[in-house]
Amino acid sequence: MTLLARIPPGRAGRLWLRSRLATARRGRDQLDRKMRILVPELQRRRLQAERCRREWAVALDGAQTWLLRAALLGGQDVVRHAVGPDLAQVELTWTTTVGLSYPVDVTVVSPPVDALPLAGNAAIGPAVVAFRAALEAGVRTAAAEEAVRRVEAESAVTSRRLRALEKRWLPALEDALTALELSLEQSEQEDSMRLRRTAVGQWDRRSAT
Image (cartoon, rainbow, N blue to C red; front, side):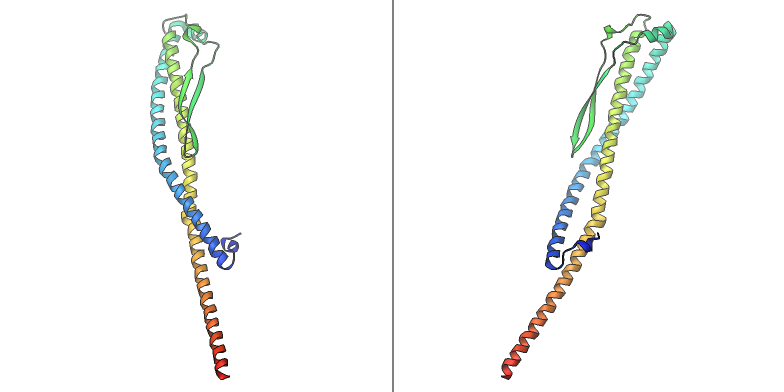
C-alpha cells in the first residue's frame, strides 16, 4: 500500500501525517546518534584487530621456530608425545554498545605445564610456552575480528535505515503533508466563500422584503 493510500481524509490526515513525521524525525535523530557512536567504535575495533594480527604473526613465527628445533633435536615422535590429554579452555569477555554485543577480551586457560610429558629434549618446554602464546594471540585475533564483523554489520544496517529515512520516508511525508495542507487551505477558502455568498444572499432577500 502506498503512502497516499494510507493517509486518512481531511484534517485526520493532517494529524496522521504530523504524528508520522514526528516519529520519523525521532527515529532519524536516534539513528544519527547511534552512527556517531558506532563509527569511532568500529575504527577502534579495526585498529585492535590489526594489532592482534601482528602479534599473532610474531607469536606463530616463534612457535614454529621452537617446533622446528624440538623436531630436529628429538624427532617427530618426541613432539607428538609432548601433547597432553586436556584441551585449553577459552573464555570470552563481552561488552554491549547501543544494543550491540561483541567480544572485547579473551582468557585462555591451558593445562598446567607439569601435566604435560615434556621429557625428550630441551626445546620441548620453550616450544610449549611459545605455542601457548600463539594460541592466546590467535584467539584474541579471532575475537577482535568477530567484534569488527559485528560492529561493521550493525553500522551498515544503521546507515541504510538512516539513509532510507532521510532520502525517502521523511521527504515523502513532508511532501504529502504540504500537499494536504494546501488542499485543506483551498477547501477552507472555498467553504468560507460559499458561506459569505450564502450570507449575502440571505441579507439581500431580507432587504427586498
